[in-house]
Length: 510
Image 1 (cartoon, rainbow, N blue to C red):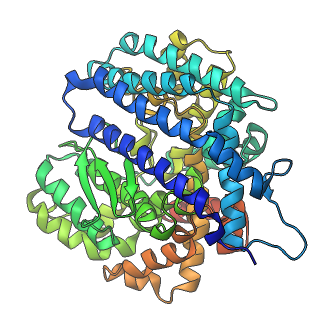
Image 2: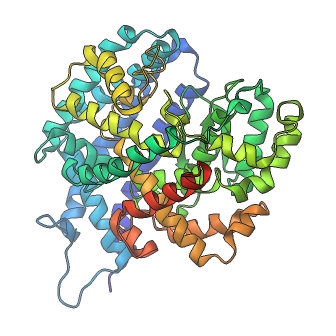
């Protein structure tokens, strides 16, 4: 049996490449958190150079020569002779390295450098445009990034739509054709459910969430919850950014960010829990495989499942607040005096169409994703012009959610993704929602009295279960294979739909 030890010449090169990428990620993290505004252009060049070097090393003749010994290029799988089989980790590693190498080989190094530079510049302009509510400030950069992503799709090659080439980067194997039925199934039941809720005689008042809440205390409560989840502050940190995110340089250095609004208690609270779910995944990856695909997350859909599981299945549940609400109430005595836990639970689960995706309730969240999925397909395919985006965005918001953003900052400029070229990213949020409930339902079956543990503030058994079942495997399995190993089924919308119908049916007495 051939083992990973035989692949050391390859893994040594991969480790060097990963360290270069990690250095670029440190610079990107700093750009979003502490870098002075004037440093933008220099930072874009620094990141572009590092990513260009990493790309050249990945597609080098040395790596190609090593892969040619061990991979069948016709199938992209480990080459095996009778009596000379690879063990499973080796087969998985070779499959995933070949996937990365083949994709990177199609992209010229000068293109990779240019794309990195333009995305880094665009991120900074986006942040300024969002702050000043000026879409036209961002438009030239968006147009440039979009054109480069179209070029990338042409380099990579695709079937049916150039959007498929970009989608596959974030969710391997996903296509428009296999996502549309999933979204259709969700829409067919979520829209009628939303209509029933809006017509219900039960009207939940969530005004308690919009009192004045001290920002430093909000942040401290977020840190407390992160620690209870098992997020290791010896191997991570919590900072502020314009758009919450998680970045990892190594399982021993995983960083999360949040944002705080004085009159929006949910914003900091749930972004901490959400990003903490991402952070736990990255801290739970097997350090032995760092630098190789086995030390990397399998897909953004699976990654998002971890954040949504913690944010919604746990963080918006009754058991969670049985323990944490008295602490929150003590932290904000004046604001929460006389507000019992049931009223607070109803407030944080109030369903109503909202402008901001990251602060949307569980029910309407997927409608935000469907809107973006449609818009970015049309952008990539050339059916929509970037200059028309504000009007198109507002029209779709009214169509899907019945509300129109009063400003571009609360509309087309609210998400950072297009600024850094992440076209094809948004659908993974909905996939994460679906996977999250599948995983959580299985966790409840396999962890005795999980709800009781959560109600006692004991969250570590769930973290350990997720680490053993999902995190530690890296890219050993495909997303579909991993889901099937954990739950006995590939992606299935039914558990999520059953979950929301039961939960909100009870809340709104439908």
